[in-house]
Amino acid sequence: MKFKDKVVLITGAGRGMGKAIALAYAREGAKVVVSARTPEYGEQTVAEIKAMEGQAGLVGGDIADRAAIASMVEGAIACFGQLDIVVHCAADTSHGLIVDMADETFDHLVRSNIQSLFWLAKDAAPYLSKAIDKGRMIFISSGEANRKYTPTLVPYGSSKAFMNAFARGLAVEFGALDILVNVVEPGLIGTDHMLRTLGDDLPHRLADHFPVPRLGESEDIASAVLFLTSNEASYITGTSLLVDGGATMVALPNIQDILKDQHQGSTD
Image 1: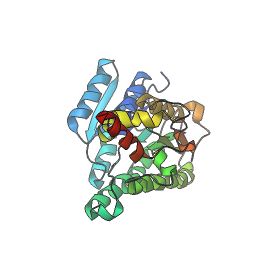
Image 2: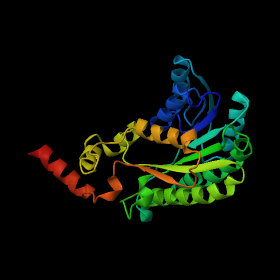
Image 3: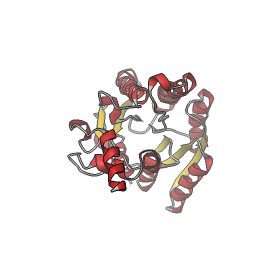
Image 4: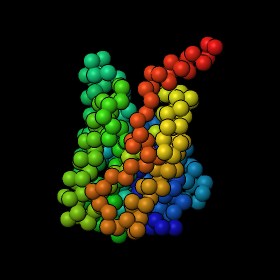
């Protein structure tokens, strides 16, 4: 029960990595504040935590909305009276070529993936500065922040690169407030959303080329987050932990070639 008596707010906790992180904290005794844009997903996470006799509350809202961010933090305090850890997992995953992307699409990505960092850090800092054993803030970035170029992901990858830089600067500023700030960069994680976007076959074909030849699991990311917010990591701040099975160290095959081979195989 490493996190007994601690309160953690997790954005994007309705599904995927955010949900896995929420459940992992609950198993370790934390009081979990679930933030989810879609209420029914958030309610399901809360129900699963309570089913394991954990404590959880639900706050809603879209991270692209300034008022919603304030409501999330205020809701966490209303639920449990304190805030020790914030994990910002929610993000906009808009993709497309720059020349084809609507201004409104890009604007929403900026609000979700960039402005939300400022809003959440600003609102949570007064409470995290009073946390048990130092306040902790974790941003879930992406291995895309380290890649030279992935087709259709320039805006997304760039926003995550901003996140990494923002977290490093924030770690220095927040050090005086007794708050540690770190980043976890997932690689290719087999979430429902990712598999719906890329299909069931392509991600596994890509993962075959990794030094650890498998897709990542949401629990891999949860383990990294819990480590960085544990007492064992009390001397770590301003760092980024890449959890990608070594994917960024190898040259991946052209996605279009894989899709072409896949299509030819289906017609043979």
